[in-house]
Length: 229
Image (cartoon, rainbow, N blue to C red; front, side, top):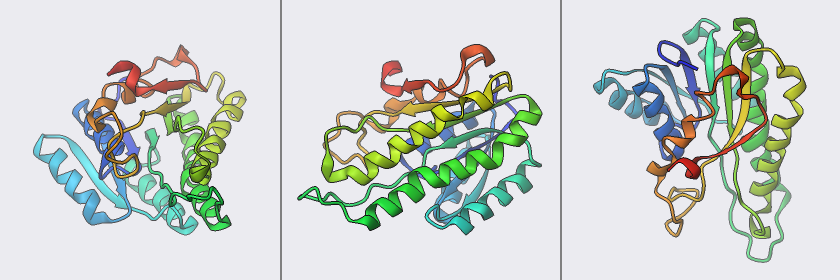
């Protein structure tokens, strides 16, 4: 899909994977909406993109707050004129490491809200207009995390997001809208930690693959950014 001149929302775009993705989309001519939890953090990215002759707009929303998620939808629709073409659900949180592997209910509640419920709400909000346009790309960032019960809340929330994508497949057939998963790999980010083997820059170009797919590529697939690094 050609993204030049089209609207794209990237959540969690002030750093890490989201920062790389939003800059790469802007470099391809997309009109990017830069989301983070604070408009000042988003604006710094917008300023950088603008200096390189790209088009970007800053928005803020706390994804743990359903009302803020609803407000984000309204902001994006006002900016894009209800014509969003790319939704890149990148933002996520990881609750604290629980050494005894006993994860409190609060960890699950927060992880599911930010890592699954908010992305699903954004998908549900923007899918109808994408279907009406006959074109759209939705990318939900997942994780290859496994065998770490100390981080069970994060792992389970990502597994739930994976299932959301796969169960949506029947409603996407023939619509021109593709919804896929992207695993960035273990990265040296705030979430991944300094011990991770991969630099955040390594997600490009792989992280763009599920955005640039042709319509016949299908939905429900897992793309691993490190396969393309």
